[in-house]
Length: 284
Image (cartoon, rainbow, N blue to C red; front, top):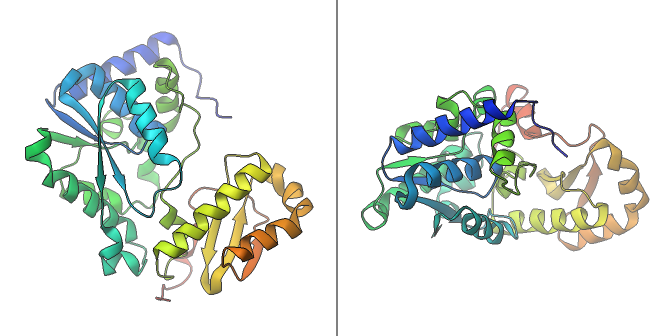
């Protein structure tokens, strides 16, 4: 369970007003909407600031985990914002499939290009994303794609960090205020190992199985070379993984993984990026 940095109601209300005012100043706004806490807060602010001139756009492809689209639809309905679902075709781009360290650039390029293609029909002036100030401290090639497509990042522009975003989500009574980060399934594939619909589907099924078995929302199944599954769970869940070792091995092997490993460092976001400074990347 997350606990946002303590803040007075006045501070949160002031941040909420600043954010909705910023979006209002942009006219008609299309929010790139995954249904996570960041994009939900931007969508809520856009709805408040822009009214019916705001819409939320969710991209669908093989890299979207099971249940995420349904959750995004329910959240958009709760916010009261018009919701548009677009199919993206990043899996037809060889630059994306080869899964080098800049994979996210090509994914976001496809997303923003696809949204802009619908601009005449959807009638918006600006695309806004949910990047927050904490994202500036991580490796985010998708930010370059946003820059090239003139996508605005209101949370960054206002200096709002993840803790601020979660506090705003609580302020607006958004049920995703404590939702763990849920990056696309392709981010689970080791750099240099080609991204394919089959591989991301295996990862998705493995994570769904483990979440139910271990009763935890925070975990990752990383697909390494040679079909090795590297399981990351919170430290408190390590014993449970060992307790269910045989069942986990059988289940993941039935999905097509060849080797099953448990990462003793536990769950940590962005662990795949650790290799970027350690070794050159090769295709596989």
